[in-house]
Length: 331
Image 1 (cartoon, rainbow, N blue to C red):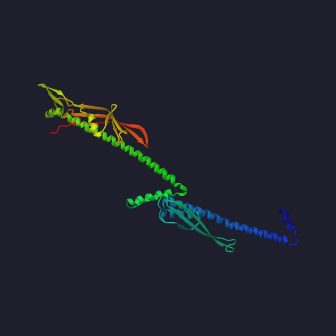
Image 2: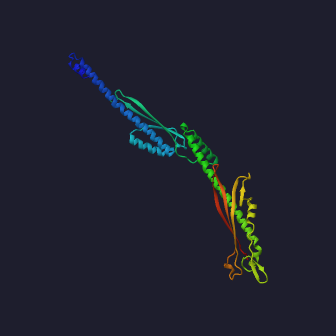
């Protein structure tokens, strides 16, 4: 290149000067063109960022409205661009619904002012999905319809990404439902056994009525019977609590424990053992009947129920149930 310039300078015919001038002019034109075109590429990049951040604001807020307007003003001030903005929809955008924005901006490419200039329209697009669930106003049918629509939108996720999410949510809900169902099943069993034990203890108190009657007549509720001419003896009847439980709950004796089986007659529902019945008698002929111990019966029994979860047997639930019943005189 250096040798060529030297030849041009040494060429006395003048042709070398013309070539050199042409080359310099072409270089200046190329440089001027780069100076005018490079800002256009910068504006195109800024326009793409403008569209991306606008859509992101719509995704976060779940609507095209005041939030996107504020974001638009901030981006105009930041980039110096005032593009024409067109949204695919305005207002609220339901969860997982698509939203897109199109930006257009006109600029000129010119070498020397208006000479050789021509307009260029820059265009940028961006799209996303709403991340906000808007509560559906209306009856139960509309709420169910909205839930179905959200599930369908999730299953229609791009690239099938919604399917694993839907499957994971469904599985989690199923596990939670199974746990809650098993908890309520055990609670129902415990309440039923406790109520049956309470009925049996009340029956024990009623069985002692014959002995309590004489104490009630004297102003207290002790269970005593005349013995001889001037003597009294304590009479206590613990009753047949297990028999009452067998009748109420349908349990049956097997190996020293009371078992309740399900409808198939083989699957254990619960087992009972360790029954303790304690009767506390009122003192005989107290000086102040109002402040003395009343006639009471207390029953304690141990219940064991198998815990089943997702088809597996876990450690059994063991509970000690305790009830009380007493005889209160009414005047």
